Image 1 (cartoon, helix red, strand yellow):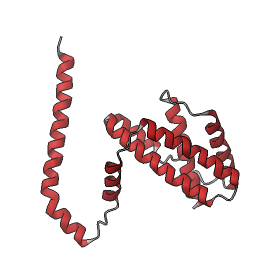
Image 2 (cartoon, helix red, strand yellow; image 1 turned 180 degrees about the vertical axis):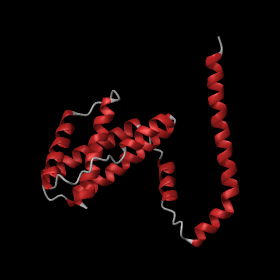
Image 3 (cartoon, rainbow, N blue to C red; image 1 turned 30 degrees about the vertical axis):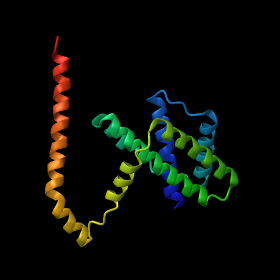
Image 4 (cartoon, rainbow, N blue to C red; image 1 turned 120 degrees about the vertical axis):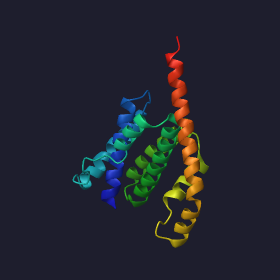
Length: 177
């Protein structure tokens, strides 16, 4: 568990630093110091835990090139929620009070960021989590999916068609003198 937590923690650090480099966001100095101290603390426990592969950064990089801003914001909110759960777990496992306080500091700043810049799409977020939690091996889920697939397919086709029309409309506006 500590191994997974360290990997996840380092992921947030890389995410934070990458995000700072690519935006006008400002990481408060005290939070940066907390992250540095937490990195030192968890690296001392076992520096072999980080395997050099980020958790979210590659996906974010790919998605920022291939998705619309509203989708990126929803994904960022989901990721920030994941970090909140990760840091809560780490805080619960930490025995050192200063480590707990530092984790609280980082969590608080991430939550402020989330609430300020990524408005709550709670219903959509909750629904996405429910969909991802479906048990594909459950016969009832399988039957319901089969029953609904035609309508869902048609809805997806409509969305794709609308997206294509918007792209074409944007392109034709650029071509006008």
